Length: 302
Ligand code: CP
Image (cartoon, rainbow, N blue to C red):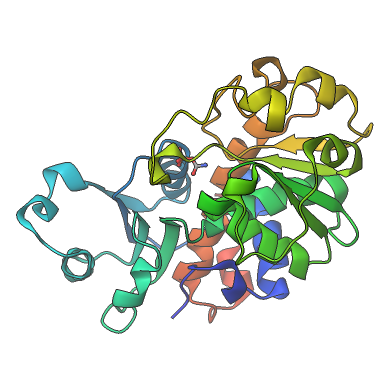
């Protein structure tokens, strides 16, 4: 089955094929046969949910919308039974965001349609990682030797987990920066002070403080920008060509100074646009099942 669950499931060949497909998606040059896709979001989302929906519409797919609040989940129906229900109704693929890490482990045996992971708790966010990689690739055209610093709430970030692993595999030099209490021992990468990080990086990947995943919800944001965030002064010390990424939503004035969100080296809104093309490519990838001849999925017009 051709799921997209974790970045380690994708080969380098898959990655570059997805980038190529995203380029084609931008020109409306990929096509899939009519199919139904269910978007099952159990956690809040603006970008991921809406960009999947736009991607599905651009591909001519039928979107089955779902909100857990108005569904039979409220009567105690499990995730497994919910997904099996959509499968029985005729869904050809599902996109799932869920608060439980590795939620898909409970689905893989019984579900026969592809699953795209839209985020599993603190686990992974593979389509975010794909669009981040695609944005870096558009900028530099390579990964080998790039210095990428991931900054902030590492411990609670599925974006950090997905990106650190895959960027390292692609040959980038990955480091972290952030408060000691949010370091993650399971991710073995060096930590730099933010003032060194901004001067060394080619890509500075800022993260949102994931307050909803903190056990003790105290106000950690006081003084955070000056101590750990990207201030205007720090941005001035970045290398001429280095870029700023952020998966968003952005806490303006907390992890990044508000005026830097749309500065010339920020690629934050470009990331969102790329999210549509990458998700078109991801949907095509899973619906094709890796078996169809490439030529049948690419058309010169759409
Ligand atoms: N980057 C991201 O996943 O944003 P949403 O939570 O709005 O989908």
